[in-house]
Length: 231
Image (cartoon, rainbow, N blue to C red; front, side, top):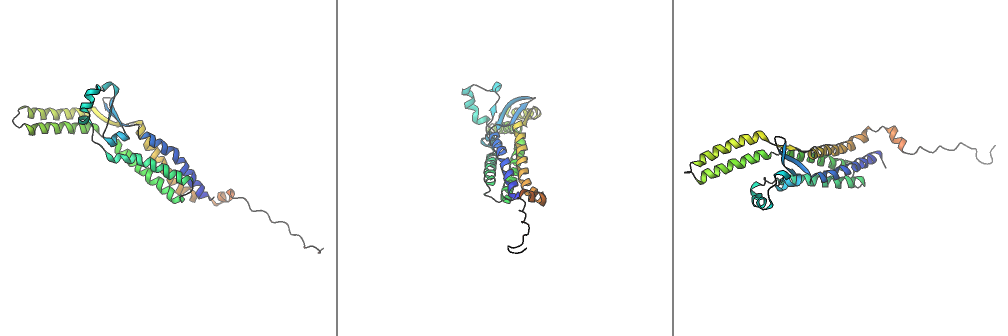
């Protein structure tokens, strides 16, 4: 086995446990909604895809009322976050195939780099999720709908002004933050991409003396002896 193939298999093997952790992290809380440091709710990568959010236990409503208001209070779905599930699965396949040596070192390295970068993009998108902004948009849309439905209603103008004031206050108090799981996922994706880069760079940096030391030394030739019958 050449040095390049050996290093490629080591890099593919190292990516396997990190890919498995990334797959598990996708179903753990990625972001949480906070109001002055108090957690109101949280959402995993899967929940971001489905447009769901888990309320903190202290703020949970009774089961009956929660079912009635579930559709109205559910955030918008973000189908593109399914890439956060596909990327770890792809990394597991690339790592497993690369470990068995069924791909060339270049193909395995490219797969790790591309999927690692894809995971980084998904995490960055998750960091920029803003539930407070969505809540304020819903309030503004409700106020506009009320104004359109009843133009003669004197309370419509007041409702719109109250909605604007509420949006200002919510923007100052309610924040959406990434959890430790999300930042750990970002770190692991960077490490997986680093494994792919190392697979490409390290073989060219290995000196020939090291490569020759890995192969067995040549057997010494036997000393010269005269043919039989000669003195």
